[in-house]
Image 1 (cartoon, rainbow, N blue to C red):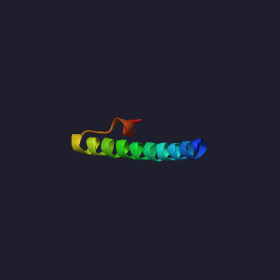
Image 2 (cartoon, rainbow, N blue to C red; image 1 turned 180 degrees about the vertical axis):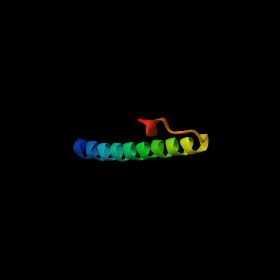
Image 3 (cartoon, rainbow, N blue to C red; image 1 turned 45 degrees about the vertical axis):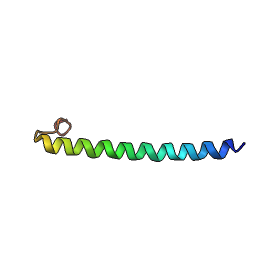
Image 4 (cartoon, rainbow, N blue to C red; image 1 turned 180 degrees about the horizontal axis):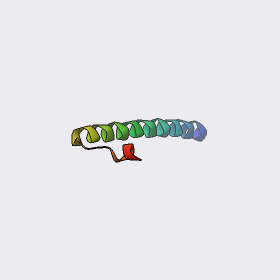
Length: 45
């Protein structure tokens, strides 16, 4: 069985997916803050 190749491919896909999810969450949070029209609590820290 090609277990090592399958695991490496899976790990690579998982890492890429994690990056896309993180980017999506940052974008959604940014749009939410702009749409909300309120001060971002993180800016006051």
